[in-house]
Length: 125
Image 1 (tube, one colour):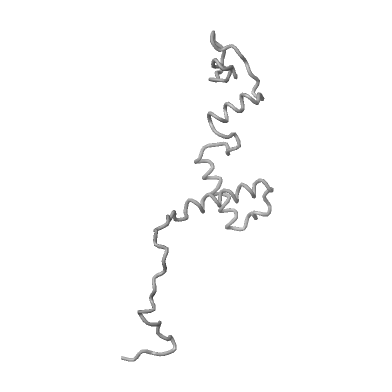
Image 2 (cartoon, one colour):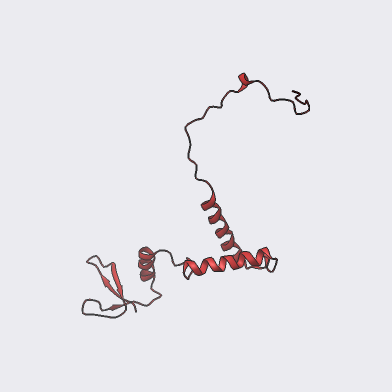
């Protein structure tokens, strides 16, 4: 791999493991053109490898180690600290309520209701 098929404009159209009569051009895996095609088709290559389930397990293990004091975030490499920070930010965004503007922009005037009772005064009945 990879053999590529090109369209009439010379752009990569598809990538194949083996050659065939209409797929004969071989590109090295380090080809910038091939990497760009794969990135455009399947997303950035800098995403974490592995299944989402495995990543959740690793995240949970890291949380447990941190919570039990077996590991400090400061002991992680700079890249790992940045990745962990990104994970925490992503979770915070997921958990944050997604409120939209209500359209009510004026403050309600509650002066007609009187002031709040003084907590130092006891109300007797």
